[in-house]
Length: 411
Image 1 (cartoon, helix red, strand yellow):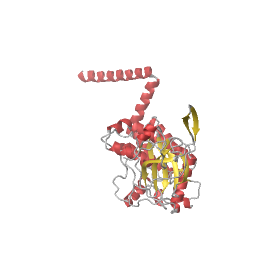
Image 2 (cartoon, one colour):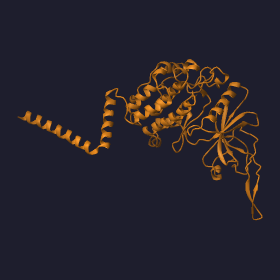
Image 3 (cartoon, one colour):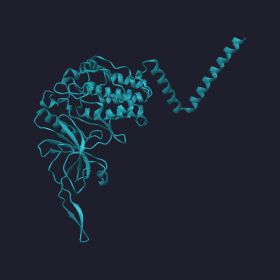
Image 4 (cartoon, one colour):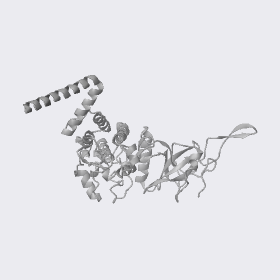
């Protein structure tokens, strides 16, 4: 087994980290470096204390600041590694660009770093630093997120994992939806659209905290869409779940119809609304509305033309139905024409709160019965005595009517 890294003994690396910076926690992590681990020759600057001749002396410590712990993930153009910051004594995540030879990759990397640096929100991973490694590649030092992606959570829920269903019933998943909407509301207010919202880019922490990650395709809608910064890394063209690029930006299964037209001018806040709705639909029903699509052409055609089944009618043996009012809320957000759906994350969030609070429109017998039930419960909470008398009066009247019918029939 490889030697456990310690505070005094430090290789080098980069990644993102946050909670638990004790040496005991460090000893629990295995050092499993890849063939080309991150390395940046940066020394620690903060001193440490030593006891000399019964006196405490402040001593400069000569050590590598960044110590690689293990890989966290790797893509076609970049990798992310877990790194120990020996100055701050915390774990961080370092995202490193594999090569600076492709201008579009570098520009996307720069855009992501600057975008994250400008968006200061609890639901957006913060950037701690940027730099260049010993081999000349660029890197971003970020907070390390503990938890799981919605992608992983949906798979567990779909499989009927009892612990996941106990921890994330439908009402708790609606809280996650609202948290994502608040993050995007914040970003949209600053002109930033994400353009690649999908379950894999939304993290849920151990304590329920929600974070939207991977802002590499994000752009300011006020900027020139024809600039070189609009291009991004090439994805796997055969994978409908993978991020595509060049003139087609995003992940096909979660794209809005306007994104499939490769029209950057048409992709704005409403496009993010559609993508979030597709994510929420899958999170709540446990089924993607294009789950039966087997190739990219079918996915793209479905995004443009196929309406999702009302979420209320999508059943699972592991959970109750999605509430009808939430199903209609999703239906509006997934309208193919941008003019027909919610125009912003703020509007979508407010409508979710209205629906969850019982203030939804009556559009069918089911919504009528649920609205009547909610009004009855609200009335009972506000005026319990009066509501009880009304119920007793109704029961007495119904009983009297039944008695009269019985006596008339008997006579």
